[in-house]
Image (tube, rainbow over all chains, first blue to last red; front, side):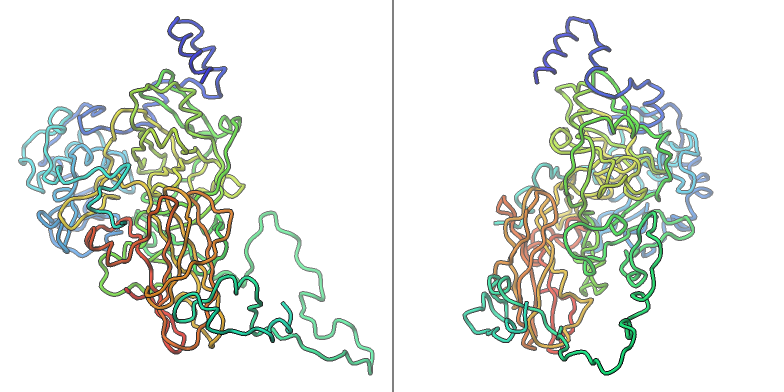
Amino acid sequence: MFMRKTLVTVLMLGCAHSAMAQQSGFGEPATQEDIDKRFFSVFPDGEFLPDGEGTAVLGKEIFEYQCHACHLNPPDESNELDPEDPADRLFGGHGTIGTDAALATVGSYWPYATTVFNYVRRAMPYTAPMSLTNSEYYSITAYLLYKNDIIGENDVINKDTLPKIKMPNADNFIMAYPEVPEKYRTQE
Amino acid sequence: MTQETKKTLVVDATDQAAGNGIMSRRFFLNSAMATGAVIAGGPAAFAQETPVGEGQEDWTLMPGDDTPEYGDVSGFEKGRVKKFVAPPAGGRTASSAGRTPLHLLHGTITPSGLHFEVTHHGVPDIDPDKHKVVIHGMVERPLKWDVEALENYSTVTKQYFLECSGNGRVNWAQPQPDQNFMYMTHGLVSGSEWTGVPLSTLLDECGVSPDAKWIIAEGGDSGALSRSIPIDKALDDTIVAIYQNGERLRPSQGYPMRILNPGFEGNTSVKWVRSLYVTDRPVMSRFETSKYTDKLHDGKSLQFSLEMDVKSVITRPSSAVSLEKKGMYEITGLAWSGRGKVTKVEVSADGGKTWAEAAVEGPIQSKMLTRFRIPWMWEGRPAILQSRATDEFGRVQPSREALLAARGKQAYYHYHAIHSWSVNARGAIRHVYA
């Protein structure tokens, strides 16, 4: 604690910044380039969403070439999958959450539209992740939202519009950290 | 453990600790339980001279192989391996879950090669010279480290369990109890000794803002898997692990570096970690929204149910074996709690009507597997074997009925109810809901 207080004092005086940092450990200064290469997150409020834009019309074509192979063809037909299968069901299931036939899809379950872009951009297409442009990822995101009746076919999705989309199941998540709420606990 | 001791072994009603043959553990610990091993008597014959090795097996009569550079298990043990329920299919199937064969192992440390593995985007082949982790965001100084830089720090070495919160997911909704031995019901938990640098050390070096609340961890795999970790956890006991069971991490366990969040659901212990972004809110990644959230009967879902529950299971006897004959057996298994230490494990042989406290093998470690054992006299009658763990916070492992009543059948994650093995009169064992 003494060391930390000393460090803060020194920083407030505005001197010996880097010298102190090097004394305290073995980390090297990280450049913006170091960070940009490793950090791909975007937040529900839109922070870190990139430039570019797309629509469901464009997204449909990209989806058919890049996504159908794993996510079934046609995608809105009902297929029974092992829930552990990574090729998730993306469409339908609206109103099933809370029943014994729960089908969690982008439309029926995902609470944030930004998560769709965040995940698809970092991880898809499965065999070639990060291989598309930001506008193409916006387009795929738009298509998934359109096919779930959340936006219109020609609605433009970009860093301004995406965070404003309210997902159907957004209000049904309960914070369970640090403790599961009493009513869902079994102990005493 | 002599023949004399065995001959004087007398079992009567006062040795019973609970119904249907559960015996006092004091009785077990002080007595000889060995069965079947009979020492052949009689002096050797001296009538004619023969080589003293006659009758020995070949491996005793000639030198063996050189010691290997990296040891492997016996060729006769090759069946004791993990089971992959969703094997990779032509590079198209992303998730792969290799399950630890708990019913074939003993002790509390899982061999590194048998530690369960769940990967969502395959196992990357990372060159450690090209891999660094950066800490950035709400810090005074963004810093980066490679594995060699981390080696300079004072490390911590501790034993922890790691459990996927999908462990036992089949028990929620599947109408018929799963019969894949223990792979599907319990194979996604393992125990290891982990060595690494406390994350708090690295955060201190960066100078974390007092307003920081969460850390977004991202991996270097092809899905750049990401999870939000509460800052209080990160400053408490999270480590950046670089060794498992004394050797550098295996690729499937995050080589060259991973986050290890003791007691938290396994998915938060991000493997191949390369970015730790300090911020004031969770990122709401796919794996903390569409996955690893617990769907409840009322349409709500638990999110960030990070801490693993108190839990236990009998590993032997279990459905992988049949009881060959009446007699004394050891009931043994594992217990754990994501919040701290297991303080008590009770065992029942009559489906929960009566319970007896099992012996637990110490030293009991916080957030680590604990092995329990109790002797059981099986007299050829049907039995239902169960174990029930309690942790130092008084949390008691619930019955399946109670757990389903609280959360419904669709929760998918965090199943932690009492597990039941039914033994029939012939000694065959199967998993039942009881």
